[in-house]
Image (tube, rainbow, N blue to C red; front, top):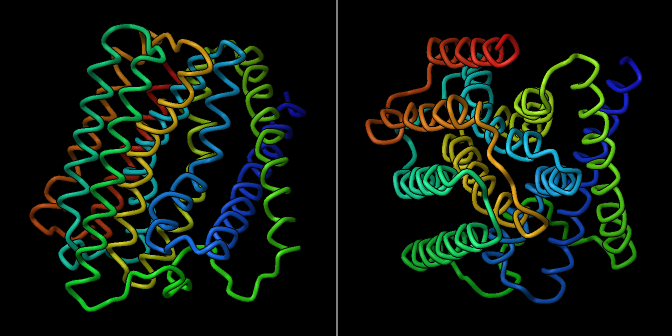
Length: 322
């Protein structure tokens, strides 16, 4: 048991480090090839930061562990709202009235409802996955057009290579050899980390006599949400409410649309009945919790941070005990 926990921790560490390496390598390679920074930010960075969750879900599907594949996604979405926003708010209030995330939140809510609708069929197939990826394409196109129009209205150039420092992981001084090293480390480390985490999670579930769904919703989901937590903490400390909320909203959309959509092409994903009865609706409920903060501009104060964190602890307790 102790050895499996060590393997799980090692797998998580590999996923985080390899994901960061892949993002840095891919971003700088794209910028060197002349891909506009706007496209890089909306696609490569978004996909790269979701790579750990994606590899975990794919490995879980290949090992016939749908509880881990879906628990990773659903649990991460719940953790992103309650833990990733709750814990930073305990440190410093997040002024949501200083940013406008209504459009992207609406897209996230729509993606959540669409995901729930196809889940009611009992099994997510490649056909459903194709539908999720189509919705993702619409979301990316909408984000690109919105960002481009915003930059033009504010007199910001949108040419290739413009303001690369604005893109996460961009380093204008990074040479070709280092770019290739980052890419190789990321491409090797991600599948190794995912393999370690999924295998050890299955063994931990057996040792504790719990379902792999419980492990997916707790250990795996929390672990893969740690990079988002670190990003949100820094954004809150810097008073960047748009980054804090945008990080959560964007991550949740990619989890549902990209990760489940791509993973479904590696095999059918049966919906665990216990998730359909409880966890999916908790995910929808936590998504709706953000309505007054997004549309009414309520600040995420320390009180709300405590409430969100307490709700997350309660949810984890209910998952483990039932």
